[in-house]
Structures are given as C-alpha cells and as structure tokens.
Image 1 (cartoon, rainbow, N blue to C red):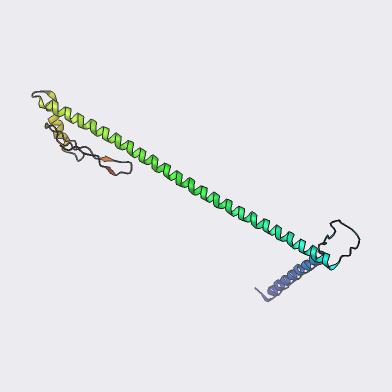
Image 2: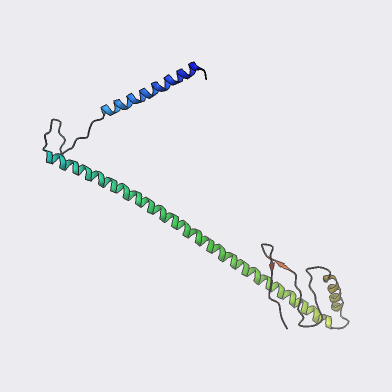
Length: 189
C-alpha cells in the first residue's frame, strides 16, 4: 500500500470510531432511570418519599429481579433435565433396537441351522436308501450307486455313499450368510 492510501484508511477508521462513540453517548444520555413506583399508582407530577420508603422499594425491586433470575435458572435447569431425558430415551431405544436385531439374527441362525439339519437328514436318508437298494444284487440302482460313488468322490464337497449301514456320511460343506462354515452334529455308531 502506498503512503497516501494508508493515511486515508487510518483517517476513515478513526472517523468510524468517533461516530460509534458519539452514538453510544447519545443513547446513554437519552436513557432515563426507572421510576421507583412507591405508591403503585402512576402520577405525572413530582413525588416526595422518605428514605425508608425508597430503601424498601429498592429492596422489593432487588427481590423481584432475584425472583426473575431464579425463574430463568429453573427454566434452564428444566431444559437441561429435558435434554438429559431425551438422551436417555434415545439410548434406551438404541439398546432395544440392538436387542431386537440380535434376537432376529439368533432366530434366523436357528432357522437356517434347522433347515440345514433337515436337508442333511434328507441327504442321509437318501444315502441309506441308496445303500439298501445297492445291497440287492443285479438291480439297476446298485450299478447307479456305484457310478454315483465314483463321480462323487472326485470333488471336495462330495457325498460318500457306502453299502454298509451305519457308516458316517460326509456331507457337503455348508456356508452361512457370512461365508463361514456351519458345523452340524454328526452321527456316531
């Protein structure tokens, strides 16, 4: 900035400061003190009061101001208490939502497990039926069972069928919703 521009800016800022100060002074001069209202009746003329009346009126005015401040503090306290209640209610709602979600997930997991068990049971029953049919010599099902046995042993998630009754049947690997293996109870003989 040049020297002239700097001087001009300084003069403008001082003028603004002086104008603001003069407005404050004028506002202060125009404001008048409050009437004490000792008698409770508005009068236009001059009123004369004793010192005791003036002191009592000032004490009443102070008490009134203190009462107003106490009411404001009570309102603020009520507002804080209301906010705290709302926060507590929100926390309770969140907890109940989480509990309901956990309950739904447990129910779904139990249903999925029950469905998987029933499917495994059906697969086991089919394997037993195939084994029983395979025991009969010369039947088409025994040849089909042997062919199925050869085909199924080739994969990782295969079903091994056997002609022996009571043998443990390897079932396909079950994956849950989150791609985790579901381990089901196995039959022991």
